[in-house]
Image (cartoon, rainbow over all chains, first blue to last red; front, side, top):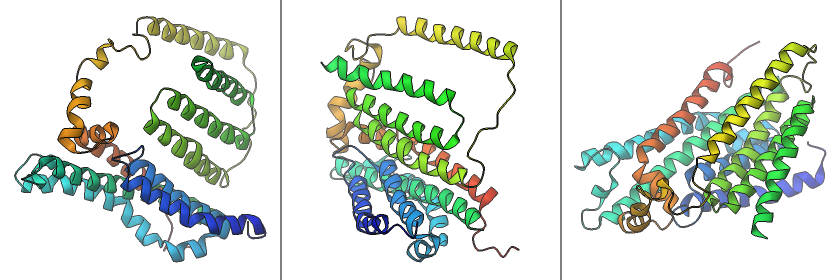
Length: 140
Length: 180
């Protein structure tokens, strides 16, 4: 798509806002619609759109494959890690109330934010990994 | 008026499904599947399930279509024509009609859509609605149920996505490998 000037300009303008919207959906999922899953999809979409329009080489400068591969497992580890942290803090698995002994609701809120972040990281990592894999095969 | 708004996307869903069945071009099928998901997101919005609608619009209409097109770039864009077999097609049609009628029959026994006396609204839902914001400090009920009350299920879902990603990586990933 290198020859389409309008597509290139519009994409370059849109990508930062797509990323910002993904972070908004991620962090605002507790008050509005959305959450880690939707945010992860939108976050991955930004890089996929960029890769479709500008190719894989500039995309990999922004998002190296090593980071994508790490994100795939990092999110699950963060989610399960929060669960085990609750055990260490004296509760049961994934019981976030123990994170704040004065205000259990605050601990719950913190735990929810962290596991949603884990969901977002894994979802965006998996989607980018799948697309990058196809793109690598296609360019060969 | 509200019922009419709900009916239009459903009619479009039927039209899209029939069109997809008749098409041979995989590119057109992929794009129409994306439109189907978008209509489905509209239906979910009418049903006040905004979180589900959001997921359907971003995943079904957005990322699935993109991944389908990416997969198509590695294969062909047209479905191979199969020879007609009247006996097989007729049997398939009869089975599909019987199953469809069975589903319609099953819905007759279900409570009406949005019925507040439906069993599903009388079990744990009232407690989540009343106590969710107090216990978790999260106003969005969907988030509090998914991430806290049903946190174990969501961990399982994330593991499923993780497994899918690992599967693709194990089978097809070639980044950073020196191959001829």
